[in-house]
Length: 126
Image 1 (cartoon, rainbow, N blue to C red):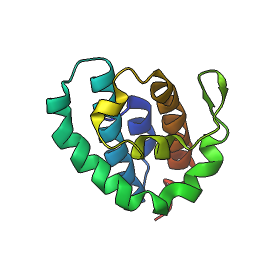
Image 2: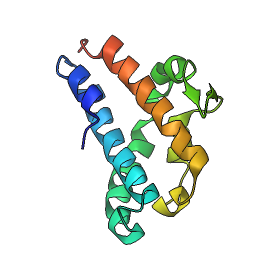
Image 3: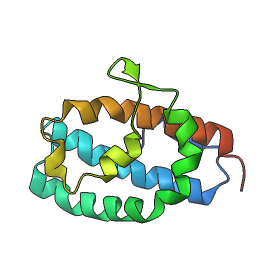
Image 4: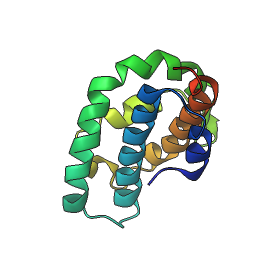
């Protein structure tokens, strides 16, 4: 399920590569939130996690530098974000690593905010 605000921003997007990245990130975020909130078992989460995580692992380098200035302007846990929130989740090897991981969950909004800024500024270019 797509974040409603990101969905709103994406309606003017003319960059299919960015749209694809956002869609895969949405999938990873959905798995992480579902597992953290215990609305999804680890067994239920694993196939979708593997699918989206593998793609993002391959493709993130293409977006790393474009996202950096945006996540560096965010806050995580009330303090300036010090680590790449996207990489933090891509360093996880399984959904098991999100169980009880409050620090990681505090970085999800920073990633979303950075992604929304990227969509807003680059979404119209092809």
